[in-house]
Image 1 (cartoon, rainbow, N blue to C red):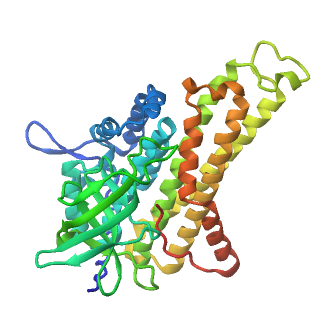
Image 2 (cartoon, helix red, strand yellow):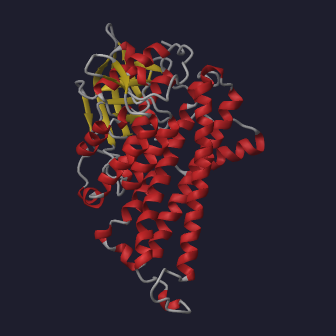
Image 3 (cartoon, helix red, strand yellow):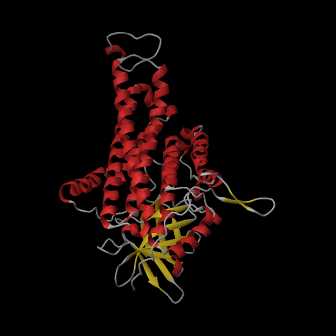
Amino acid sequence: MTIAPPAPAAPFGDSDRGAPVTSADGATEWGTPREDWPHIARELADDLATDAVEREQAGKLPLDEVARLRESGLLTLLVPAERGGGGADWRTAHTVVRTVAAADGAVGHLLGSHYFLSYCARFFAGPDRAARIERTFAAGHWYWGGGIASQEPPLLLTPTANGYLLDGHQRYGSGVGVADRLLVRAAVPGTGEPVAVLVDTTAPGLVSGGGGGDTFGQRLAAAGGVSFDSVPVAREDVLGSLSSDDGALSPFAGLAAPTARLVSAQFCLGVAEGLLGEVREHGRTAASPWHPFSSQPWQGGAPQDPYVLTAYGELAVAARAASALADQAGDALTRGLERGEDLDDEEGAEIAVLASAAEAAAARAAQEITTRALEAVGATAAFARHGLDRFWRDTRTHTLREPVAHRLREVGDYFLNGAHPPFSLPA
């Protein structure tokens, strides 16, 4: 069996309007304007920040955190307004992910993964089926988990008279402990073609938990392995091919990879900026960790230790440079998505390379910032009550799954040889 390619995908549509609401007289009005979503994300982030350290140290399943995301309306942010969602674009989604990740890295990771996975219906299913899925998703306020990474061994999708049965084990999936729906990678018997499959987490034979969730960082990301034992799947829930063979996917569908890369970049930037915000307040009031080596004691007034000022200056430059590159890549992605099926291979490759560069820069900046910022604070950064180590642990856990070396190789091969990056989806 071969999965037919989806019909040409529709562009964004009107993304300036908010979600539709019904007034008392039954008339349809438009709800939250796009410019209000960052404000909603900021309010949620402020709420998460009040007890982020305690929640992270407890490491409980993030049921309450996902409930807060659902109540805020942020889960359906990218669903077009006419389908019951927030009607925002990826620029807004990037801002939201970065804002939430700055307050709580694990929740930011949950939200970013959800945005990518829930958007995949547009990449891999035809426009009519994607519209039906998004309407149902928006009505139910689903949280999407799982993963369709190419490094995952595909599950087995066996056809039956009424649909399919899904069998196998996925080693790592994001948010599997709290998801309403999972998007996973499966193989068609005979051809071995990889396809994206949408699975109801309440389906019989599905067991989540174990494996990949046992990490020292992102403790609230509800990640882990998932087992499938003859899980029933409807025909309409097989979205489409994930094949990396040349010509198997349209340039538009190929934008799934840079879309995921930029979610990763925004997560890294958010965690880095969150730690910088924490240590900045500390650095304004605390004594310099390099005080014994300073030529003057710098008593009173604003901090003037040249070592401290230089360290914070270097970290601020790293964050701003990576942020600027991520914003540039985000703008390119938005233009590519708006072109839809008019996008050509070369344009898609340029977007993919720019996204790989942005992810590499953000990952390196986050690793540097979450390490050196602790040095700028000094020995008190090790106190568990401050919880500053969670920023480093969240970043390192993420970057171990997405090694920078792969992105740098893609950028270098394109720079030297004009080679298009391979279609590869992240964990």
